[in-house]
Image 1 (cartoon, rainbow, N blue to C red):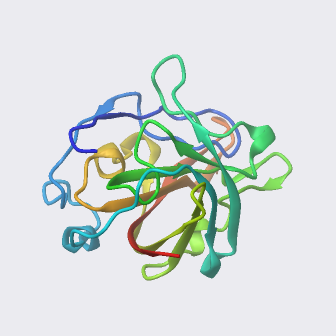
Image 2: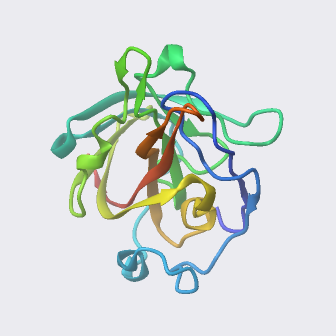
Image 3: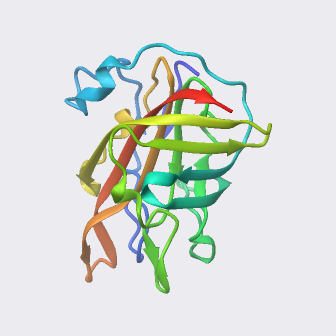
Length: 203
């Protein structure tokens, strides 16, 4: 999965939408992100085993009460990354333009914080802390096990596309949702919450 560049999406002016950046192409950065000032825990992740490709079907984070089915998402006509539609706000989107969870590289899962009727798939993602286990059930019958390395909350206008989509030397996972205060004028949350994890096993 090395050498890929990923498109990242602009802020969406709807309730609970997940903003993934500003419509720019994220160029790959050095594997440990030393030049980016990102979460320091990402610097020391060792090379590790990875899994063959198999589509994700469900994500669970027991420590945070997150349990949601996964659906593939792609790109909008303008090249930005899609998120699950609000009629499927209880589902998490896997960006199929990148690796699958368990493959080497940054697999990205995106979920809504809420919708007009209440909590959505990643409503409790803010409870996740470093060391938590993320379980991703896959179509090959395996469950990929990830350990959370770091979390960060960033303004949508300053989304760290290279940290989320840039190439890495391990099987990584990034979980993305909305965070921060709600802007009633823009009908959107101000920030993005990002959880970074790496593969530590499978069952």
